[in-house]
Amino acid sequence: MTTSGSAGQTAGICIARSRSRRSPSGPWAISSCCSVSSACNRRAGASVEPGMRKLLGSTVMLALSLSSLSAQEMKMPMQEMKKPDMMMSMAPPAVGDKFKDFTLAKLDGTKVSLSGLAKTGPVVVVMLRGWVGYQCPFCNRQVGDFITHAKELAGANVVFIYPGAADMVQVKAEDFVSGKTVPSNMHFVTDPELKTVDMLHLRWDAKGENSYPSTFLVDKSGVVRYAKISKEHGDRAPAADVIAAIAKLK
Image (cartoon, rainbow, N blue to C red; front, side):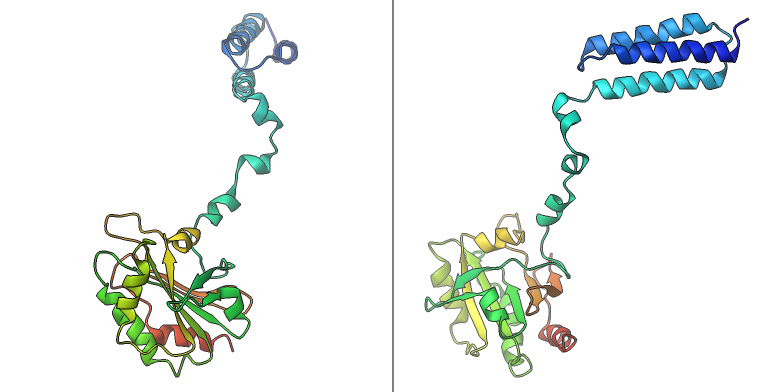
């Protein structure tokens, strides 16, 4: 009768032989592992204990798993096989993130940058829907809300970004602000071809849309302290919420 000790010795011999037959992935590796398993079973006999059978099975599965890896994957460090930072970099800005810098032009051609404005205090970035075949009434309402609260927002700069196609965004933006008195600390800029929209991963990829209407509060160090990204036209951040967030910075 074969004892568990002799079965263990047989398994050890089989494992050693399987290790000596290294090969790249492919049908040979599978057949080799299967032949090793069969040989082990024949030598161990039917009296091999259940625990030893599990060990043999695990050995075969491990060999199969290793044989399925390519040579490139075997050389690749574990941290390079998974890229969590890459996935995070493709997400829209969130509270605690560093807001990506941008430089955009106002309607008179004057250029403003986030980093430049942040030197004097917090910056509120309001991404509008832009020209979507018509002037968005919710964008009009939100801009009007911020202009109405200009005094409470005097300690911050506000940037309204109006995205759209390069051949019409200037004309449509001028039409949007027509009749509005924009305070000196508020800057209405255009985003031709939605380059800033894409940089911030705010593209609303649907017919008749440009960007998700969004509002962010960025502190002097460039870190997002408040963020609201709307998935509906009318779901906007009111000026009162942004003013409250600014107060918490002091």
